[in-house]
Length: 242
Ligand SMILES: Nc1ncnc2c1ncn2[C@@H]1O[C@H](COP(=O)(O)OP(=O)(O)OP(=O)(O)O)[C@@H](O)[C@H]1O
Ligand SMILES: [Mg+2]
Image 1: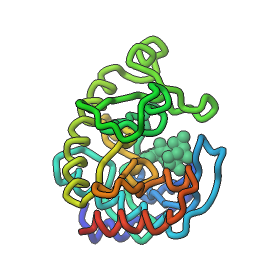
Image 2: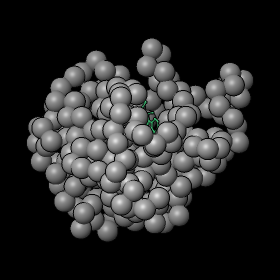
Image 3: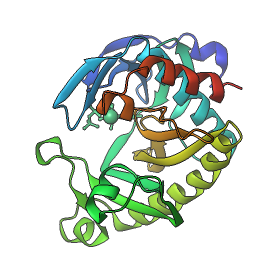
């Protein structure tokens, strides 16, 4: 589709409103608009707040990263950035599984295994979580996926392989920008039978630490009331646009 054509894609009705984003249909049946909100939530929606300019910052950070991944040969839903808060993406039938990749111990992994935050892992750890808010997105593995027919096992296999490739690419991308990629969450979905990376990659969905000072530049600042939330997201935006 040409750029000229893209600028004429028309926004239609609201398709879905989540905690951080709103999806709108467009006059193109297979394209949707992802609108990033300033709303912030944590702990499965228990903690609520607003981060000034978060929608804009996450939209631009995620767009830059998805553009980089597209260029690097990863198949993603990202099509184009439309304005400060919105991007055009391919409509997905989202697979209800979140793939988490961890390079450094933090958050729930530290808690679960009684390990100190900040310990670098020899090999990345990949975890699967079942996307179900009423259950609090429980951690599952491939056996649960198969037994409860949550998704096609072949899709999960490919998602895990892609997650590792994406991790290698993003590790270097952030490293070059003085950022330690501690961990991140991915969502995938099907578009015309093809498995694509969807959703967002932003300080809401990653743990990003300054490489030198180990200062947190992500949503943990909101979760843990560390202050300077907007400044940290802006710092990530400035660095990814470098
Ligand atoms: N390209 C896409 N097509 C269709 N849906 C998408 C696409 N990319 C992401 N989504 C879905 O759109 C929603 C984005 O909204 P948001 O991130 O605010 O949701 P959420 O509050 O995290 O809730 P949940 O992920 O549990 O639905 C998510 O449900 C996500 O899975
Ligand atoms: Mg979400």
